Image 1: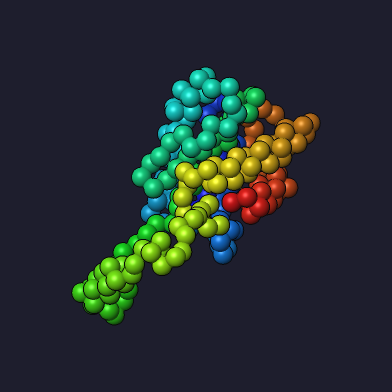
Image 2: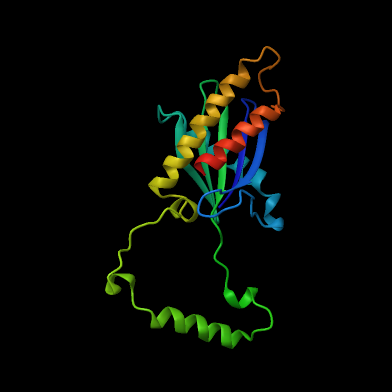
Length: 194
């Protein structure tokens, strides 16, 4: 799964941005956003600010969970006491059509092979296997309780680092955060939880 994390200030200005990928389930930590859609991340996140402003007054919680969805992109939000918003755009790995990604193989052969494997296999329950979720649930289902809990833990750890960064006497409200230590802490939290 690919992630785009942004901290938005009280004047709806971006204070911090970080893009990373999953480190769980064999991930390498690199974001896999498509080049055509990479520039859209900022627009998707900032368009969800309207929803955040509607939802924030209806609940007393700081973590608002998944608040918006745009095609295959999900946006989760965490609010601070100073009305600074932590927004996390997460995009599960897309399932691509095998015929569109193979080279040198005819479409009819690929289609017949994929229909053969899916139709000839019995369901896992009939083979005595359970249909329980695996540890890769975080990487494949952005709305599952496991994913929500992992995102919440990530947001809380980033919030702790955020408070430490705010305590610097050189920081002013709504100033962009350029600290390499803060960026490393966000990246470490992403590797740890997501």
